[in-house]
Amino acid sequence: MNIQPVPTAGTSRPPIPGRFTEPTKGEKLVSALLSKLPKNEYYVCEEPMIYSNRQSAHICPDFVVVNAWLGVIVLEVKDWVQLSRVDQQHVEIIRRDGVLDRHENPVLTALAYAHNLENRFKANVELLHATGPFQGKLKFPWRNAAILTNIQRATIQEVIEKGIWQAGSVISSNDLTPELFIHALRNIPGAWKLREPLDRYTLDLIRSTLDPEIIVQDKQGTPRGIITPHQKQVIVEPLPKTVITEDVLVGEAEDLVESSSVRLVRGVAGSGKSLVLVRRAQFLADQHPDTRILVMAFNNDLTADLKQRLSATTAVEVTNFHKICRKVLGDEHKNVKDVKDWVYKHYLEFGCEDDLPQEFLVEEIKYRKDIECYDSDMYLELERKGRGQRLTKDKRRTINQIFERYVKAQYEQRLSIGKTCHV
Picture 1 (cartoon, rainbow, N blue to C red):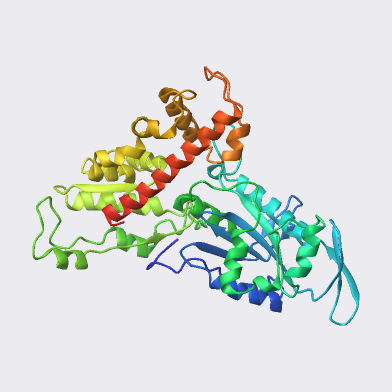
Picture 2: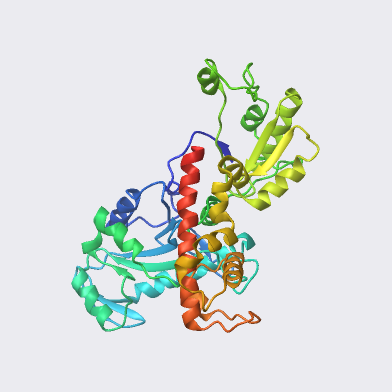
């Protein structure tokens, strides 16, 4: 774990000499395109090592891309210059020297990489649904595609029309411009789509799976890297002489903000970020016993863990970020957060008075939120028993429309919360 200024996201670690083969011209081209993706939206990992079920065996996909809306994308790049024959299992190509060569279908290669990576992700229970009909399944979708850097779109379209490749699963040379490439990534088919973006905690877990680190112990058995000398310095760093109180700050406010120490603590899961936060809060509470200290977390489980760790420190209040927002926004925040209030407020607009009572609709939306069922197609096939009335496909389609409207209202309100709280 390290402590440093805000990083540039979306980059991968530098290549390790002798670990990977020399990148091809096509791989360099794709790498350059991936480097131009918005850094705050995409994380790119080049040739991550994915261990298979065979002992000591591993495979390295060319690229893995992570996005909050798309999930995980596995990309396989080929520099083939001419296709000769394509079927479901193999591709025959004509090399630059005129020799006929035979390879595995690159879409299957990317799919195999994706399945191995899926197994890696499933080893982390925090990336799985804990309850409901999707229990044990990943919280995010994955998808895979091949990139043929020298093959034109028209040729690939012929193969698609024959039913050998799925539309969007192979990216052509025509798509290798910054504008078209990002469009091609978004159109890679997946098993399902996210209804809301992945949160930062889940994205961090995905990144730590792709690029893992361990904390090595010293000879005394103490985990090294949990509290480094630099981290210890941050923990015991004194506050400015002027301490913020509940009084309204006047002239000195701007100077105080500029002189206050702000730190970003980065690290993969388990590297000690929370411990630094706890030790810092304990230190400040000890040094300033008359000062109220607030510790906030976004994740409910982390909030509960921090409360337990800091339970003996009475000067410290630990709360959830959303509770702070509710305090700031008051009843305005409850409009969407409270499902019942939202349904009752908009019920007449739905036009479903004869089919779906208000109370039934409220409970169904709450149920879908509890099991994290944001996919409309999945909801149509979901087994629902003991509901008091039969949920026909037409009723489910109506509920889908209402639920999508509810999710959209939640998303728009989150944007409003962010602007209101200046987060």
